[in-house]
Length: 95
Image (cartoon, rainbow, N blue to C red; front, side):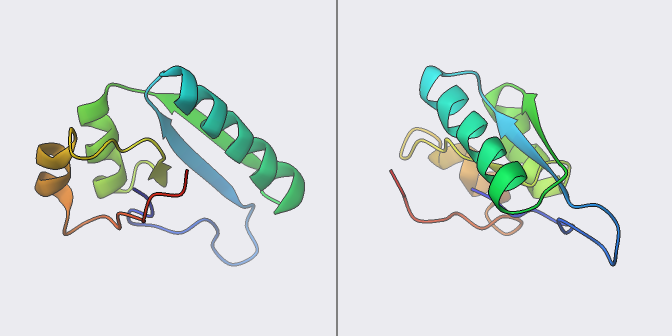
């Protein structure tokens, strides 16, 4: 899920992102790949990876503290998603 409140950049200030990371092996790979792509190919100055438990990851995206969390596991995370569904955009599976 991704794109909570806030924006990646504002005006001429630096472009930064904070991505949630659950610490699972595949999420470590995806998050670090995303970090490299955003920093090296898309011009972001900093992409921070923030390690959290799954509940705080959903809340962080919904509240705008995180820009995205890339390892939503449906249907297992259905209840967590239901609590924040009005404040996040759940993107279609991509891998």
